[in-house]
Image 1: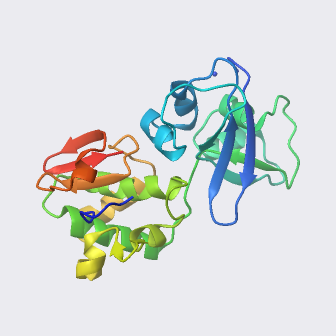
Image 2: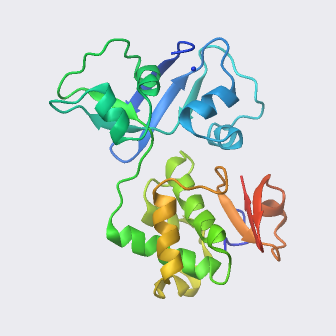
Image 3: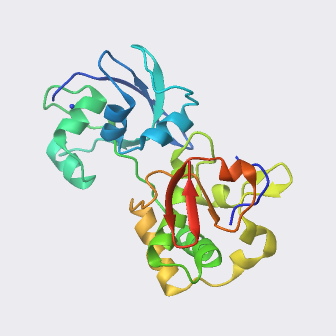
Length: 242
């Protein structure tokens, strides 16, 4: 588990300024009149609470022109591509692509960079690492809890508050403390079980039973900092929070 130490609508026109990063998929959304965290979260498949945390918001109130960090990935248009083909490839709608990229014609050109729903291109070694963490953290827990542990890692990868790769998230240190106990005690090095491998793939493919949680701990934890965080969901003995 986490260490007990402090861790850390086309229905309306939207404007989106997107920024390519060499290490992260990131977008900066410009709030327009009539926007709300609920609407923006729905557009980007991000929870209300996660948007607030990732943007350090103390209030849900928004103002026109405000910039928000939202999850998105970049895609370079290839010869023969169309909005329809891209929407099918990334399991999204043409309407979503138009809104996010401010594209109101059907014309695309080869080499054009557009933005698509967040996706993470993972390697087999990352699958193994994630599955080993899930095994160490949620062995004996229901399958849904295993998927939830993997989802927390992926939510951190998407968040501007944490590193941008699975490995860097799992091995992150806060000062002298590792974020995840299995890294400290060596359990991360034990082989993953079959259920955890399956759960890792589920989390990597976007399954998130936690609705965007960034932390988890078991129900025996006494750390007041963790206990004070808003709870997203409780699965058996595991608590997932924002």
